[in-house]
Amino acid sequence: MATKLAPETIVQILKNFETVEEVVVCASACRRFHDVWLCHAPQIIWTIGPKQILAFDDALMAVRATEIVLESYQKEELPPDPFPLSSLSGAVRKPSLSEFQQVRDFEHLAKCAEQIYVEDEEDLKDYIQRDQPDGTALRVLWRERFHNSIYRVLLAGAVLYRAYQEPMHMAANWGLPNFLDKYVEALASDDMSSEPVSGDELDYLMTFAPYNLGESGGIHGSFKTLGEFLVQQGKKSAQQQKLHAQTTEILPTFATTDGLSDSEAAVLFIELGQLLFALEFLVGIQGRAPIIVNGSGSEEHGRTRFAPDLLHKPARTTPVVLFGTFFPEYISTPALAADAVDSHLVATPVCRSSETRPGVGFQHIYLFLHDLHRMAGCDNEFSSQNPAPYPHHQFFEYMFREYLGLRPGLYVPLLAFFSPETEELDESTVAQHAVRMAKAGAMGLITQGTYGEAAHLSHTERARITRTTRHAVAAAGYPQLPVIAGCGAPSTSETLELCQVAFESGAGYALVLPPSTYKAQYTLPRLKAYFEDVAGASPIPVLVYNYPAVTGVDLDAETLASLAGHPNLVGAKLTCNDMGKLNRLVAAVEPATAAERGSGFMCFGGSADATLQTLVGGVCETG
View (tube, rainbow, N blue to C red):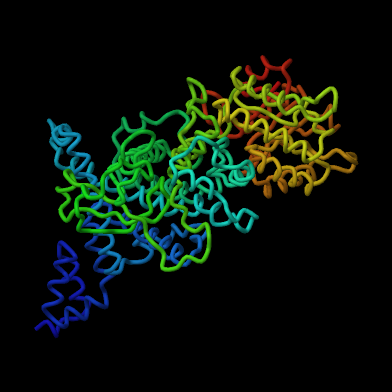
């Protein structure tokens, strides 16, 4: 009888089973069904999987992202850049049976984590269901979001693997063949009494945004792919859910962004919070003990020390790349999720079949980020109102600050100090002055601004001042304080060279004057094109500096407003003291203020004499 059924009919029959395992049993009993199953398995799995497994597509994407990293790791390569997030969903490519089995392993890991969490929160189930007519449905929704957040930790770890492993992978190409060997030796000997990272190594690391703990503004390239993916997922969730009216009320005023409705922004904010919760629960961040222990019994990755012979013998093993460790590991779990409460989730490193290249798969990123934070002198305190983020939280800092950019407030141009005897730079006084301004409450510091002697400094001296400023304020406990470097020059190429030097020296933003040599030959359209060319190629965001008393060039409000649309032009400083122009610019671009995000573009008054007028206009001030 089954032999007479059309394949399309058999597919529909198989799609009506509750689980994929039931389909496999049915298909094994009939050759005709078996043949159809083998031919149409991805389509059938994609229909049944979401009904069988909570957050199925999120788990599938995490599985595929992990597989991309594992393949690159075994080849001693880095994953592709940008990471192919758009091709991971089952809606783009239906899952194979082997991928479904891996999803089941990820689901089991999530169930184990759920059991451990619920055991510690005894009243959680009763609280969710208490006096709720739809309590059971709420319980299912809570479980789905919990599992989704676990899968997001696994997905994010794989997507960001390249950003955190790249410095180690590329070090030999940059003349550092023994990069971080001293640090690894210090870890092995448990002797961290000296600074295990040399100045050259630190300078090299700071060219990679995730390790430049002093500036989150420059991390955009490293985190952008994952960030945009989460934004799109938030939009999709908001469209699919019927949100309670109070949901949008939890949204901070800074969390709205262009292209997001209040409900979409609220969902994104909630999902980021859930991801952070899952990260801290699963991995253990900033003093929280992780639920995973090392198979060796060590404290690697900040995990609790256990004697190996006390560890439960696990029954299921799956490879993962955890956010925070950014290294491939096997996580082994007990056969039954309920047994996880009295057992352990055990991690062991994934080994490569061959090791011919140094720097591939650095295993100590979790602890290294912690020690890098400590070595910078950071006490995790920007100020009582603005705590500096823990290094492992940088992605979240990026996601939230992406909606604000620079903080509104007072930005201080720093003086350049010289020795009266030698006329050489006095870096000690430069550092002391920068720290003094930071402690006084400046929201940002500007090097090579007014009285920064930019016109009299070589490129090397500019870099020394910016680097000294960045290191000094980081060591004083202000690692997130924005540093803006003056980068104006007569030509586009030299300006871009200065922007690159500023970036490598720790600046997060470039302040650029218009070119003024042969200024009579410049028209406003040509000046606009100059700033667009610079912004398009600069490694850091650019602010336009209108200072006609110095350059003889005065940009009008219309030109400045038109430049505000460029994605890498983030603000303008007006030292023309033309309040009418400033107010026209404010009206045109609706800039960010202390109370509202606006367009995100920052407008600065440029003189202390104009502070009151600037603040009345609702914008920021530099002295």
